[in-house]
Image (tube, rainbow, N blue to C red; front, side, top):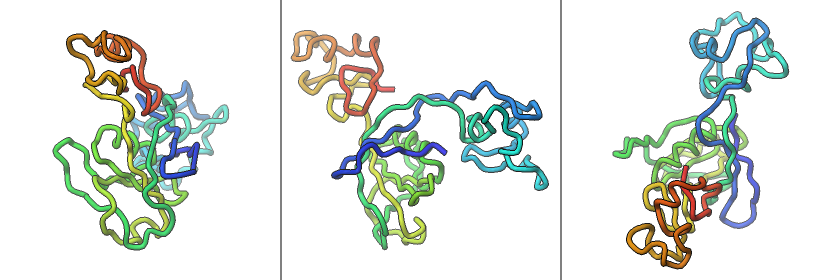
Length: 229
């Protein structure tokens, strides 16, 4: 599973490394010469790393068919594996440990297309939170799985989180700057883009959307003068 690796656990803000962007299969075939495309085509696995409806009840485990140290859940995007670009991102810790009745709740379908309440591996919740506003997700304690919500905290039974969980709020890209579309200008610019942007504190590289959109991608959520992924 794609798990968040905490880089810091001191204070309310946490830096996490996780995979983003389009997933790429490893150049791999199993010991019976089946590829990742075969696993996807025949529904042998799920995106969360489980066994799909096409995987026979008498079949062995995925690991049984490993080759060169890889098996489907490590090598194939359709099975929860594959390769993704790693970036460092910021999350705010809301609660840690036994939540009791203090959980998060909001399962309604939202107008922006983000549907809180979905379960999935951690990378799924984080990718969805990158697309949503006011997004919060709960990591089931040491499980590698999460569920995300629109608001927090509200009320929800602790049993839904296996009694222990970690709750994070996604802080979003360009948290230290000014976002205009995909362009993240420096806060010193005052506004992002527009007439006279090159003469503002920070110059064209930090304040002009044309230069920023044609330049480098942001590497962290606090980066500025860059294009958000």
